[in-house]
Picture 1: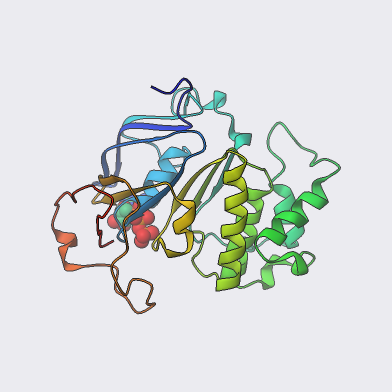
Picture 2: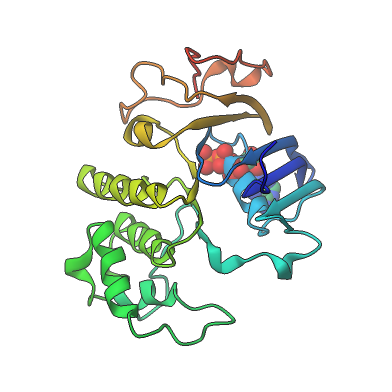
Length: 262
Ligand SMILES: Nc1ncnc2c1ncn2[C@@H]1O[C@H](COP(=O)(O)OP(=O)(O)OP(=O)(O)O)[C@@H](O)[C@H]1O
């Protein structure tokens, strides 16, 4: 038994959206300093799970605790300033006339901290450097590509120096250089003891950074353990990640040599 609470503890999570049961009894515990990849096919419930963890999507059943505080009932006691979250494919620039530096600096503000502090500019530039965009700090995010806007939002989460960083498919739309830059900064976060939960389609880029993989299928955890070796061809952009066996509801066997088709 760990002496301290896990950083993330989800118990028996159920989420129903519309008529559909999207999460069906998910248990997930992430200890402080662990790096966990959340994997699964399109529609398996990965984004819904991370949205439930950060309290964006209400849960129908079960509980989520962050740093020991219940996200549902004692939401105000959750130390949100310690959490960095980057949703999937959210544009940083939609309708916002702000530079990349300004967007990233805004990550230092919350309802208790309305002034970013003296070192804000240096911290924001360092975060932009980490995602390979320091040279474009002064430009309006409205002119950035989708992938670049995604990188700005990752920098906005990194600038908080979060103790828990949750990234939903952060590598989507990133070129190789940006992926390497991001992997480097995640490695640094990890070294200073931060906890990471990263939704991924491909393990390849972050293999060395991940201690554990949790695989969802149809809203259930079907693997929680050693990161799986992706099936051959999964890094091919033309690869179809939705497989015929998606219709099946079988539980994959656990084990270090597990091959999971996502
Ligand atoms: N607001 C909603 N109302 C109804 N159904 C929803 C809603 N949001 C998501 N869903 C459904 O929930 C299922 C899980 O979606 P989710 O985005 O969590 O999957 P995912 O594993 O993150 O997929 P992807 O890899 O494509 O991002 C999908 O079938 C989706 O259509």
